[in-house]
Length: 447
Ligand SMILES: Cc1cc2nc3c(=O)[nH]c(=O)nc-3n(C[C@H](O)[C@H](O)[C@H](O)COP(=O)(O)OP(=O)(O)OC[C@H]3O[C@@H](n4cnc5c(N)ncnc54)[C@H](O)[C@@H]3O)c2cc1C
Image (cartoon, rainbow, N blue to C red; front, side, top):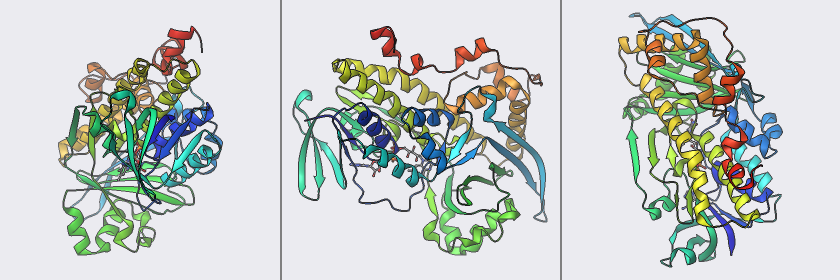
């Protein structure tokens, strides 16, 4: 019998397996896919995820394989009738406003990060790994005796564990078996995503937009760049009919420097269609079954948060399970700590990502003006800028209130300047270890 069975060897499952391996909890991790395919997923690590990776001793190797991005630039253009572009604004949001050793973002290819986490998992004898193995459901036994049914090369097997973690991503059979409610939102746009070689000068996260066009460019190591191009639903088909030229044109119009680079994508097979959805489940835990990562919440990719929520869920859940086994407090009721810490944080980030998505969802001139004003006011005001970066970073939450939103919309004035956020304020809005792992204080009085 295993202490914990993790279903899904994505970023969330692997991070959790590392945490459990490091505290010697007997764990089984299963993954249904034989090997990785050409699937682009989250590649941008936010500051809190860097902190988590540091806590599990993998930050140095991740940095060696990643590309540090200390800020994100927003370029707004208008396209004139003759097709030429006129720049309307450039703004920059900077992570270094946050007083933390992790105040930067980092790009790393998704599969490379998984490989690095897998190398770490392999160091621990207490973690078994089966791949390919597909979870199909639970037996009908009473909760304490419930077993997971998996399909492997050897046929069907039943696995008994004390706790089961559904980390299977968006389409989670564990979530289905829990019968929890789920709210979903769809969007009026899709994305095409692909990585390709980049000019050396493209070394910052850059979002380039016009009234009705959007491309996001996120530099990767080895002089590559991951790109996301916003398209209308159905447009992918039209573009494919037109040929790759239509794809190259979409990029080069927005950033002429990409000419000669984007053309190195020589087949549509390399380009992936990404349909954004947002969902949040009503509960992350039922009896001894727990959901993490995209199985619990999937967020619009605009704010680059999906993979980060997955890593941060697994950090808190892993720490909690380690504590439960170490202290022999394996009653299911303690799992509520995980939901208590992670659900409000993930829901807030999901809301922010949704709001960011809306800013780019409507192809109207007044909408572009509103967006330009919002970004400009946020950069201009030290408090709004700080809030924006803190909330994005995952290192803390300082919520935007109605007055902030009115300032961003230009209804109220903002005060510019270099005002520092006071230490007292920072101590209230940044997450401490006590905030991340509150059960230590409640039960042990100390960490
Ligand atoms: C197409 C796509 C593009 C994305 N692009 C971005 C982006 O640009 N930026 C961003 O921040 N986020 C992006 N995301 C989201 C981000 O990648 C996810 O939030 C993150 O990968 C979540 O990690 P996870 O471990 O929860 O789930 P996943 O990464 O989905 O991993 C789940 C794993 O479980 C396995 N699995 C599934 N079912 C079973 C089963 N029955 N039995 C065993 N194993 C199973 C899967 O094969 C997979 O390996 C994207 C997601 C998708 C799907």
